[in-house]
Amino acid sequence: RKLTEKGLRLFLEKIVVSPKLANVICNNDVPVNEMYMELVNVLNKKYYCVMQQEVGYNLNKDQISSLAKTATNLESNDDKDSDRDTVGMLQGIDPAETVAGREMKTHIEKLRLRSIARTRDYFLSKIAELRKTKTNTRMIQINSLLKYSPLMHFLADAAPTIYNEVHDVYVESMSKTLHALFRTYHAQLIRLDSHIANRHDLIAVEESSLRENVFSTRVNLNKRGDTFSLGERVNVLDCVYNHEKPLIAHEHVSGTGEDKKFPYEMIFRSIMTHLMDSVTNEFVFTKKFFSSEIRTKSNSDATSGTSEVEINESRDRNTFDQIFARTLSLLLEQLENYLFNCYDCLALLLMIKVTHASRRIMHYDRKIRVLDNFFHRVTMLLWPRLKMVMDAQLRSVRNTNASRLGGIELHPHYISRRYAEFTCSISLILNKGNAVGGGGGAVSGGHKRQQLGGGKDRATSAAAARDRRLNSNAGTQVDIDAESRASSGSSIHGDNASTSSSHRGSAGDMLVNDLSLITEETICLLDRLADEHLLSKHRVIFLINNLDQILQVFQERR
Image (tube, rainbow, N blue to C red; front, side, top):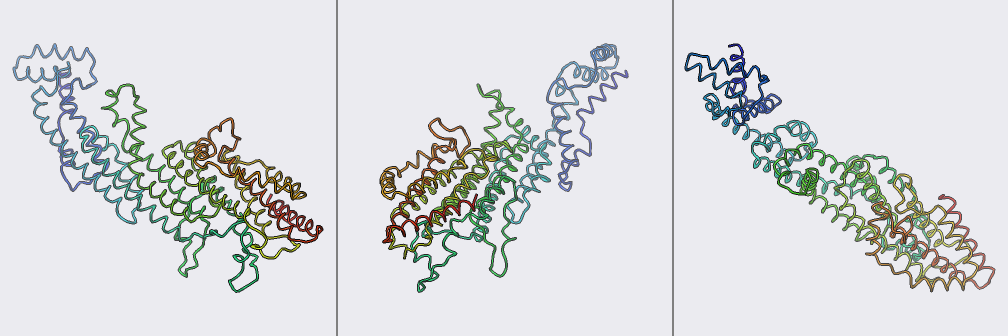
């Protein structure tokens, strides 16, 4: 009798709904909290108890046999029916076939439907808060959504249609929220752009563009090399490697209109950092909140030849693409619009390095590869633009003459300083962060010394320099698409380069080749300028002064 009583008590505990459980689930005044989540879990267990067979009661075979033997000796018909229910349930009979199970099944199903409706309303209301302005999205995700992720598991099991509805509403809401966030953030940061270079900032710039104003004949010395002087701009790479926080616009905006200005690569770095943080947070959140295990339970067996891990990764990537598709398109459009009027070689090269470093951070530090295609498309925008600007620099040196550059005296010409500043800046950027960011885009430490050494030798022979200039004209055309495609697997993505390319990869070699051509054309230009002097002695002094100035700049920038 004691064993029968124990079995009956366990049976009733499994299927009977307490008044507290019914009140918490049915009463809208009771908030969705930890207690509600716990009671929903209890209700779900009761549901499976009355719907499925062989629910565990922690009784061994001897106890079940004893209960069966006792039931056969009972004299009362009512007692026989009741104990047969208990014993039958313990022996594997469906609890729904018992009298108590059939009675409770209807009530449990109604409570389950009610809990589904309340859970749906709760999640949709919290997701709607994400669309409100000045909302701390991360706090809502952690405290209101992720905290109650077991309820999402409940929806995925009890009502897959409702689960998909919540998933779609969240994806749509976050897509709009992130799109508006990055659009506003870019609009605020673009006000801080210092606009360093324009289309007239060339190595062989005409003297008239360096004058203080149109009525002055005096050259502004500050304009002679500021565009090509790297200064502290290279520190943007340290900001990436050190994982520094992005710029906060309102901290640098003053009410007097004198806002603090930044070069565009710093703005680009802030946008990329903000994007990587948002992608990391969103990717981790969606992976936990929309549990992959629950999502694949019903489909993993039906999918032949595909593992659950592959299905999970595909679904996670699909969710990410739906959330960030509009945002990534917006960022690419903003970058493309900026590049239309970008003539700053240093900014372009720094942005390429920032993109490369960002990709390595996402790969090796955060183990997230969902931004690979975005990084590739960014580099496909930056490399061709850099090539075009480098070609413009080369043409400026090749096509200029003494009449465009003003008077030629014995002291060093400003062209030589601009060339030296430009070459040093490019070389420093290429070498910056090689130990951290890998060899992509690197250049050997003795490259500029080799260039200059060759320049000194060529300066002694004007005829030989002119021959080299003529021979180099045929080699200045480079297939940008081919170089960019090759760079996507080498200097951009950090993979192994082909055997025909150096450790820099095709794109890096293209850039170094352009620097070599500019060096040769600069030597030829100095020869042409030296020819303006009538005396051979003056021509030699002019070349020595200019080469000495280039050497001094190289030495200062080492």
